[in-house]
Image (cartoon, rainbow over all chains, first blue to last red; front, side, top):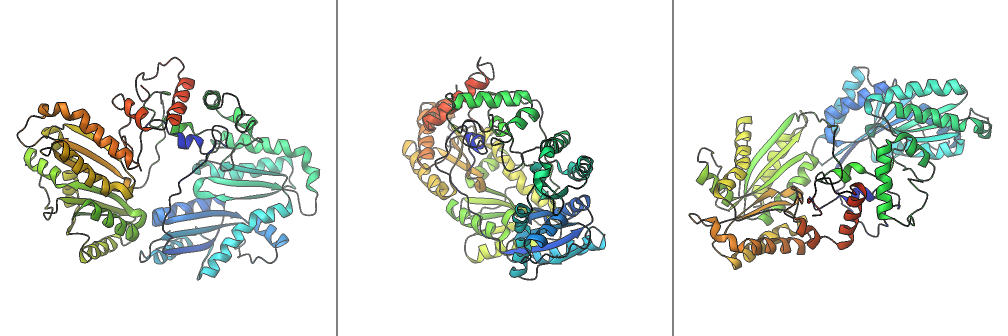
Length: 285
Length: 285
């Protein structure tokens, strides 16, 4: 329901991590379950080509495109290493895959349009290979692979984990430049870069080489983090895309956000919580 | 781009009517022009039936449904009276019409689905009559009628104009109860109730009978306004849907909004504009 009565407190509280108020009730908007779902596992030559595929699929499928997950073959290797029970689809040797899904109402002819745009992508060399799920079970199997990545990551053990976002036009450049910057610090570090490409959101995680103890990399952690954050910031991105500032990133907030914005945030915090009793230490430190 | 770095100042500023800050720059997100558009002028028996049609079309067309404009035959009469150059489609004598539009990418088969759901609506007695635009010129003609309503309204001259929103489940009840409440105050008053039904937004305007001078109704204005506002509030709606609080509705804000919310708004206003120099008198008075 449209409502223009005064300031939008709802969006101010969303993402404020309990530092401005305590949310005691919420209304959920329900949407009908999609009548038709089309899912594919697509191998692409690079993140830049994945972005070309995203554009092609958006043009063809519009708002029905509901997932576009970039997957790094490093993550698939981690699954093979730590969760052998999970069947990993082939990546066509390119090193990069995308899990793509579209949903629409029954009878809208989604399956045909989905197959057609993937056929175009294959013909035009944008997709190196594409597997369309032929059943609900195959769709679930694709998603199981995607959802196993964070668990496999934990079993390998990260040196550093980032949750960042970038303008779509800078995503491929970030992935290329970050790889060079990390290699310059230590070429043995393994990178697993995956995320929700449609949102410009990357989970960018660093791991020791196979067999090495991640504790050996402790002295590099802060330099690795700063390198990734500075590059993200320089390319117009955010160093906290989904997960919030919490207590870990309060220094980043002051470092990367315009001082006038931070001053406005502090003024709002002081106005709504003058005694500083709401989740002290989070967001603004 | 996803961004969770601190408080969402953007949404706080949107709709704050210049009382918290001055916006000096904005980024616009562009969407491709729709490849296919389907538009129809549909006569319905009542606002309640219009809402049934909305549900039917949402189920069939999903997110492609882009406009669902309720039109009161009173408004069509005002056009006939003041703008005879505008050709008004027939309303099948029901007193209520809907201008409905859907947009999708080329090749998505929108026209067929749109025609099919309207055929179902006619068969099921939800639509009393339906005209599907057969050309861009006919589509433009339908929209010209919709867009002529505010101009015709001004030529007639309103006693009172409201911009309200209601939960979808309460819209039909509001329209029925408001008609009774207005008639109880003065049965000669003409009502023109139109709006964006998909958003729960109604423009609810009152006019003198044909030939009467609206100045005669000045003594009733405040009572008419309070009657409509109280009913809107009692049914869980907002007395400012699109147009904001401005200076006219500062009293309504204090009257209808929870005092704790108003106190939070005042605290934010004082924090960001301690000297009260930003658009003084608007929103919070």
